[in-house]
Amino acid sequence: MFINKARPLARKAPSIFGANPQQIVEINGVIFVSNLYWLLLSSSTNYMAEARKEGDRAGCDVVAIRRGRRIQAGFVTRNTGGVKGMYSLAASLAALLGDSWCCGLKLNDGRYVVVVVHDGQIAPGFDLITDADAARTKLREAIGLFKFAPEAIFASRELQLSPHTKDIYELLKPKALRKDLRLKRLRFGMTQREIAVSAAGVGVLVAIGFGVHLYQAYKRDAWAQAAAKEQAETAARLARINADARTKLMAEALAHPWAVQPTSEDFIRICSAASDSLPLSIAGWILDSWKCNATELTATYRRVTGLTDDQFAEGVRQVVGVQANFDGPGDFGSFDVPHSMPAGGDDSLASADVMQSGFLSHFQALNLEGLRPSVNEKAVQLAFPIKPGGPPPDPSLKPPQATWRQFPFILRGSVLPPDRLFENFSHYAGTRIDAISATLNPGKAELTWQIEGNLYAQR
Image 1 (cartoon, helix red, strand yellow):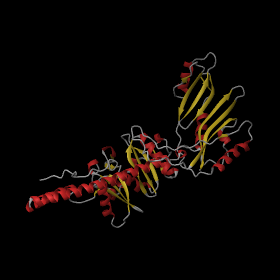
Image 2: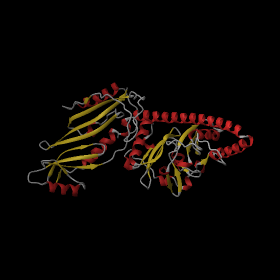
Image 3: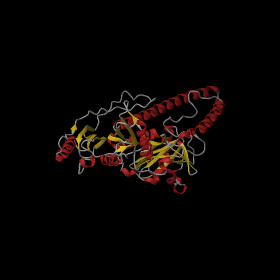
Image 4: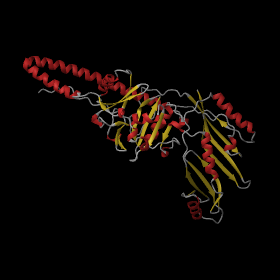
């Protein structure tokens, strides 16, 4: 039998489509698969024919069909692990959690399930199992790209993106699963490869029967047609991959930085609670200052003559339960107390004039001597992210102009604590705090506060 070497017997699915062994997980005795290539189907009556057509284009032979307001198809290839009877992980979660949400939920093996559903559809590129760092990055990308209610963001606590979470093992109990969300073969009977091989065999026998000359003519024509078709399919597939890459880069460049930061209210509340718990003295060392950011509170103590570093270190271990740090001369010691703050989510921004005027007017009304907020605009320069070890962004892509403006601010010398400073503040939307610090004046027994942050406004 002659073999057509101008074309492989079966097309391979693109590497970004479909599952692999790392995208398959067993939950409660049921096998789930993720990283499907999701497409929205246009036909509500003849959707399987459309799914077969799109599956052929993507080089996939297994599909999960999700019926909702619109019909979605998630494609995978058996060569990469997805087989008939497995459940789609994203579709199963979508059937339980509703039309608009995102999640980063931890598996028992330490990996994280990341799924995003927006406007009733599984978002392409947001159906995967990955490590903690990649899960955190993908969720931040989704939160910046789509608008989710805070209670619709479910993330494991250690990701520090939301106070809300879910137990994926409690969600995906066998009785809660819908059988229509299992993977199925796109075509019954023989595969396209088997059909092609059988047809080629028949063609050879027929060609032999009609003579070598006729068969050679047929073979040349078939090879030419097959090569042209494969070339067209490859070009179309590469065009789709490049379009997906462009869309992803654009979304990451336009992600809103304030969406993944805690709200000012949460920042003040958590930092105030942490600083209020600090003892004024540890092993005789006197509290000097502290600084609070989104991940930790750092407290600094001043040494009193006659006391030692060892005494302070032991006192910190007993009172706080963490390790002490010392500066070079040994006159100051410090320690860090970690904490977490939930992401504030997206805000509806006001104009720059409204934001600045409201912010300055609030503190002017306090009439505190020496309290003069400093607010200056910082130019926002968007750049496409470069992942370590990954390819550089397409040079033909130009970063878009940001749709927001950023105004860093500093409040220095306040004798009022932050919760009093921001009492009745009416412009929390678009205001984010980065750090709160306080210094103790032992002579006056008085604290002096400094607050740093950003105002975000519409462009």
